[in-house]
Length: 293
Image 1 (cartoon, one colour):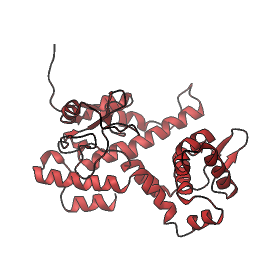
Image 2 (tube, rainbow, N blue to C red):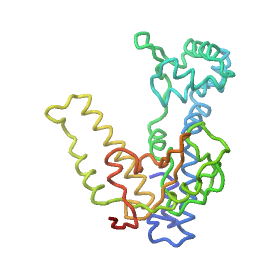
Image 3 (cartoon, rainbow, N blue to C red):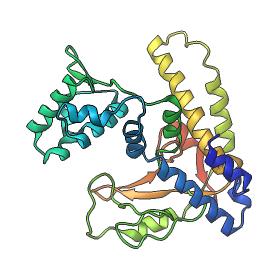
């Protein structure tokens, strides 16, 4: 258990939002958001390289005349992708070089010669050379994505409001932010909808996925390994996050939402999301249910 959550438990901010008064629930929510912000994906990974004591990446980049911000971003991208064709990296990194694709490709060649990345000549892909520690990866898997909220999200009042209590973000997905009209009333309405975990479905899924000690009769080794990894990710991330938030004890919670550039609404969650895969959808249900005709 992380130090932050251990502290939360000691101070009795959690573990079950359902039984908290409003002030305690809000305090718990703010602490969860601080944990989430601490583990934002890019800064956390970049910090592994900028603060590395075993190797001075910045000095190495300067020695080989590599743009430092470019080089650090490249290392982060490789941690995320593991393998990537040149088109992907040029698209992600060209912002460091005035959106000049040729200069970006030239900088990638410098990075390759400086052994910051490897190259697979047959697959024509860049390959990760420097990873991050398993414990950091574990924390990232748990806390890098938006978590459900244990209190009602703040009202969205502009295109730069998120519903969270400690930070702002665009209500428009990806890099499509604008200040034109967005139906904030709709987003506020769906943000106020309470959900809960269907305990029966959650238990069934968990118990069924435990039986992964051998492949199915007609299952290839690669597919079996994918199932095992999927279970491990689900077990170590989804249930763990929900347990810490008090959601696994049938507490009520809320999702925040964003729209894409076409106006379609998306639930902001990863391990816990009613728009996810089949078992994620099956595990989430309305807290206040009604029979409709």
